[in-house]
Length: 319
Image (cartoon, rainbow, N blue to C red; front, side):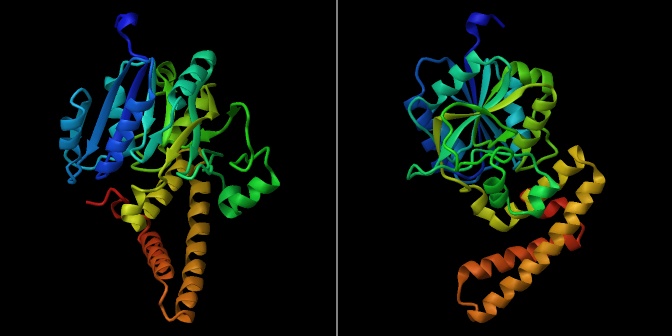
């Protein structure tokens, strides 16, 4: 393609039954992004809330890819990535609201740092407080111990939102709610791994990027409002199962089968203990606290899923 016609950004948003979030996200992009050429893809994963019609009506210039069912986050993004032409791909969750200058800061950082394959900004809550915007790669140590404790004891090895970073830093992986990816790094490393249905796709991608000597960076000056977990909260118990399925898959792919089985055994034991403690708490409160009852149900479903040897059909891909 003629370089003069190549857009700066290929914006990709995957949607599943989050119409209002999607429209707010798109409006924030048009409101805050100036001075760049771009193309926008919305990939709808079989929504039944009128999302596709709303996009067609309000943003007819957007390229809408409409799937008949939920194909998962990785596969849906890849559909758009294969069609994208931008120098960079900007992957956005529907539950983000871009702030003024955020995308500009990410693009400028990528332009000035050609060895960076992936970068993400600082995710914040509506009140301006910080969210964790990056993470270490999963490990047995991190899963066996409390992550918050590790971040307090070993801040250099386990960086966190507790530190106010004034300049961009190299990290293991960024949270995929808003991340910019260099097209050349995608050509070299490949697309998102479609074995992941939801959760840890971006972690796996960052892992593969770093193995091919591409840097992964956190850019604190680029702030993005993230309405954290709104999509997953729609089906919280299934989302929990899907997270652990992805975690075991990551271990199997990158840490080996033995460590994956060790992790599975450890977490199964922990879920049983947590179920018992939560059940006792429910008894003590005469089952009057909805939060405790929800937790009890989630632990019960996780235990049942493990006892069935973790079948794929019980997560977000069910049905």
